[in-house]
Image 1 (tube, rainbow, N blue to C red):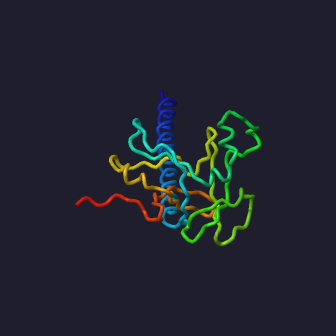
Image 2 (cartoon, rainbow, N blue to C red):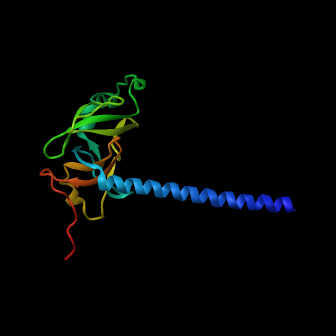
Length: 185
């Protein structure tokens, strides 16, 4: 009976410890993302057009980026039914973009390990999933009724860390201005 009580107490303490560790991990992740939003380098990526709405998920803009088309031009060919050897392409990696005077990133090359970048170049991580190249996210959710505002979007604004990690920060119009909901009057 004593052995059962000790095992029972050990399980409770183990569960409490596991819960605390999970909470710590989640909070560290949140802190890191907040730091990236505050201190990351600002980069705009040109959007490639896609369907902007989903009835099941609410209003959102599905995202594709022009740099993905430039970095991986064979993806459109592959979607047409021709399949080259997928094992030759890394499913995760990074590209290097050059920033222009408006902070718009233009594809330069696939990044090499330990590569030194020029001052106007930024490393950006990508993932390939289901034959789609993704940068940080593939969707931008917005408040219901704001679709007309975000139809003007031509650029996605990112905050990028030195290691290429990035977060989608904002949407911008063709003239680079931030698209945001006007305060209710």
